[in-house]
Length: 181
Image 1 (cartoon, one colour):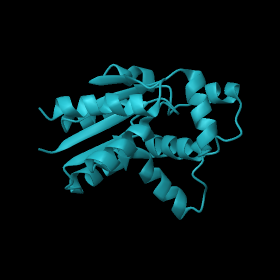
Image 2 (cartoon, helix red, strand yellow):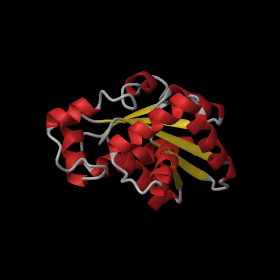
Image 3 (cartoon, one colour):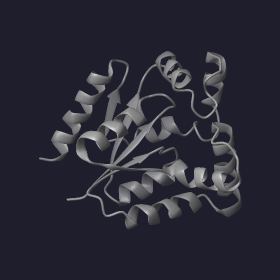
């Protein structure tokens, strides 16, 4: 039976850690909504900074319709024959709706703003290495981030990732075990 797991959560909450655990321990393959945007940025020779991803996504949705990225992503998902898929980077209600149509299990990963800021700075990707805590909090007001609390209600499971990596992985394993029954 094919299982699609969608990961939702704010920046630095631990979505990537969940995805990596599922890939390494369950043979899952990851798909990211942002990959479509990164592919375009690559073609334009622009860096994968969060601001570029946000501007590009907003522009595409404004000019070509709210579902333009969802439709492209849906096609990619349908082509993949892997038994366990992970969808990372869910941010909008139309993305949630498409995944629910595909019987996707949605997991919301959460942690305190302080913990998430620490993680974001430590990993230093997408231009985050040198931001202040205030800038980090401000970035969560961006168009791409402000819908996350609204879609949280769609989650089938919520994982608090304020603890250790081992604790997070244990919570993920418990969910997977329950889904395989």
